[in-house]
Amino acid sequence: MAGGIERRRNVRAPFQASAALKAESGGNTVSIEGPTRDLSLKGLYLYSEVQLPVGTPCEVQLRLMGSSTNLSLWIQGKVARVDETGMAIEFERINVDDLAFFRTFLHYRSGEPEVIEREFSAITSVDGFIQD
Image 1 (cartoon, rainbow, N blue to C red):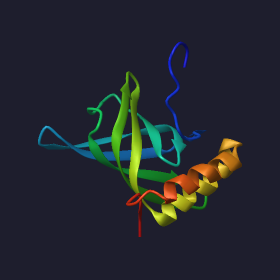
Image 2 (image 1 turned 90 degrees about the vertical axis):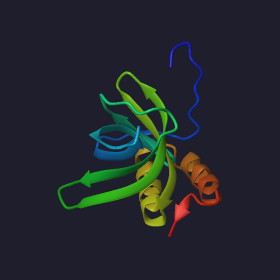
Image 3 (image 1 turned 60 degrees about the vertical axis):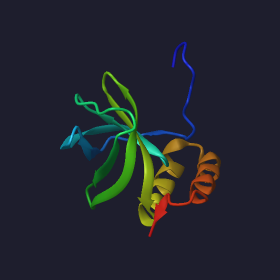
Image 4 (image 1 turned 30 degrees about the vertical axis):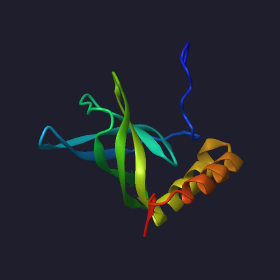
């Protein structure tokens, strides 16, 4: 980030998948679909021409399609940042199994497994973040 302050608190890994976001905005249900750019234990970046206000609660369906698997993960979050190409979504609640997937994925993709473990320990100590 040239000339700016780096605000990221978690290691991000490049990750392209399909995601669908649902949110309430202006009394209407808004559905947005698009590709992701990156993923961390606490959030993702979604490319989108439609941007919601920062702080908007949302539910994200992350679709993982592979040669041998089709998996959908559901995560509750909020819009953390908006720019000209999309939105950063901060995760607020996640299923324990989905969090385990992110942990393993980031171990391999980030190149920083020891940092991921520290982040994982910090996240699992936050009340209400993990849902059964």
